[in-house]
Length: 360
Image (cartoon, rainbow, N blue to C red):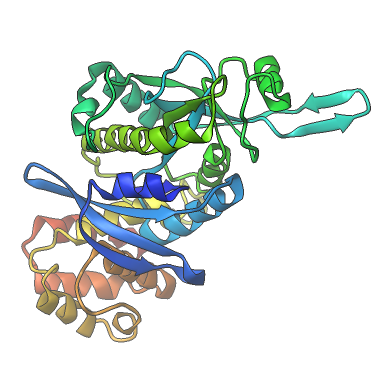
């Protein structure tokens, strides 16, 4: 899982749910923190990053997060201004995000040419389930007590653009009423975030927002009081959704194509396949210990030198698989795993999944 936020107050609310945090550097200087979300005896790896305000930064960081982590799901979590049908502290999981700024500015006025991106269908359906049960409210981390009554959750469209909208009767407020009447909230990053996910089509993405102000009654005092509250509520909903993600189903192995027949699917692994194989690699017995990880890398000359040697974290395991893909080293990897853990079910499944990719 990767969770992006725009503001520090949102980042802190998400970070409070994680343990064992460490810093991971991406290309071009982007820093992520990776921690563990624990629910009972199970733990899930979660990477977090603060993009700063605006759609362009959110879109760019989707690309970097996808390349670095091959996440199972990617969330944007933070605050938004309520437009209608929501109260302060409520949470909105956006099934769609409208770009209200695209259009043509003419002598007679602004003519909207609104574009829309949708959140991933599976995550939207899960968000509806989480919203209906209300158990997510138990995950709220209070800070001196939360305002009553407890917040509600909605699965509705929102709108996004580069402006801070301060009133219903502003130019943008009137434009939203005319062209995005069903949008219940307004933010500044949701559209760019989903646009980035659309380009990386193997990434399931969802926008989750806590309502920190209402367009009909917005001022700095509201932000100071309600942004931390709304951020905690959005984070609570996000981690309850994470907890309820169904177990990853084993995908069908990549299949080679018989001569003279069109390819049924490309042999290059998708982001989702890389993520699934990474999780599977980490279940090979002994591999997550420093000694086991270094043994694996020592047996992969050339490939192993391109990967960090300290431990088999998910980041390093993913890097190893990407390197094997780049150099066509699947056969070597399969041979080493067979020597290290010959009877492990994970070794057998990896062999079955990777066999069509090996170069004879």
